[in-house]
Image (cartoon, rainbow, N blue to C red; front, side, top):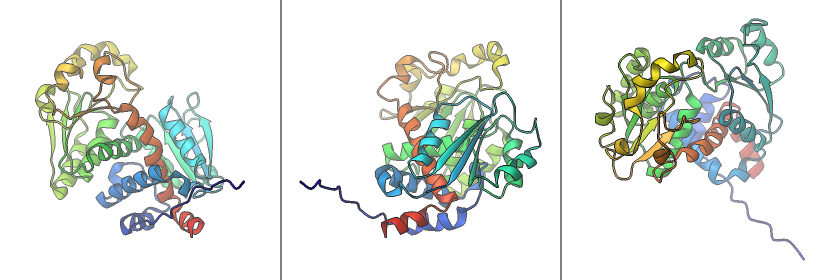
Length: 338
């Protein structure tokens, strides 16, 4: 008896994706600001395509080697990158730098000049953003920022991919971030502005996002017909929001400020009362891990409006799209499906 083989539908990439592939091949991703609006849209479009048709990309990165060099602990970032490249035919090598930070044993430039001889892409999760930019400046292979103290671009790409799944388009969407003006906040501001979303940031006094990022996000927003607002009242910020996002108020590396920050951020907790001020179909978002009943209550995190685990899943799909574009993988997809 013959087994029935599931038919394969060839993938046809549109001009937006192909143009982005041509521009991004071999490039770094240190910041969302490195990307144009068209490139952000193309990454997300390809992410949706990869998610719908994963089998079409299973040989796209055959024999490509990716090294993950992490100074910080990780669950979602490490596993989503590893599974992403593994399911496209590549290989992931993990280097634990938690006990030996990059630049300590030998210079970052020397690390880059060694590693580029063996791998096709370098993925860094670090404290200092300068570690990312210095590695990129000295490496001939693409460098991806998988988190620094200044930005978290891969998280933001996955988050807005998730919003597109729920709302269709994020153009004109009212996106509100409540909490610390940290690395995640920075990347979300830039990505929202690139995609035409109205971004509102509510932080306590003294914890606003970096002014350089705010200025850049507002410039991008002006080009895309949207706005970026900074407030200090979480209730006013959430009024009419389509998406409400929060993060821990104590990021990795700032644990010594926990006692000081707790009372300052208590009024910014996302709870049922705060969510009630958002639109009726609003979603709740968090990059995880969450400090339950600190920045968000269990009722919201586990409630029907929460899409936090959709965000976590889409880390893999958005990053697969990013790897395909930086490593020229679409040519292999076309050849394999030809």
